[in-house]
Length: 173
Image (cartoon, one colour):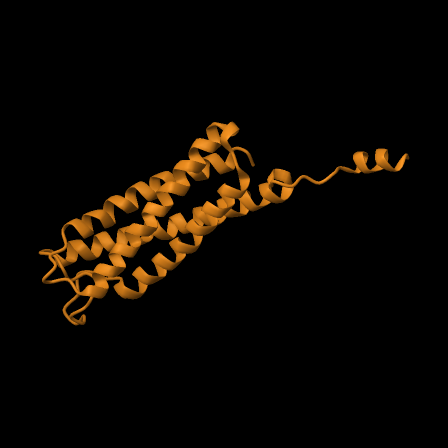
């Protein structure tokens, strides 16, 4: 299990990196006159989720390779928030995108999330790709949250429990 968690952390790093690049490009190429407010808010929230994920991933990566700085409750809280916000962000983007075919966007409402740049099809595909990496990131965070919870329950928390040998020696057995 000690090798699974660092591998997941490295995978999270690449998912966050690629997702940030894709949705950051969508945000950078937004033409505000053509973009709806709700579409801009959804993209901004997704970028906030990736920023929060950067904090969780970088702390966890460093603590995976430098065990001296490990604080299990911090890892648990960061993974919990990252998992929660990642699934919320992925659901929001999925609801706003509502498509699997970016080539046929003619019948979409005027506030569709992919409208807002000079190349609607490119923007739609970038949002789709960023959304896929956000779902991958959610799966990776859910797995590492499970590992962090198990580590916390195993005794990595701030309150240690006595072992059976300590109890037996105190009772005089």
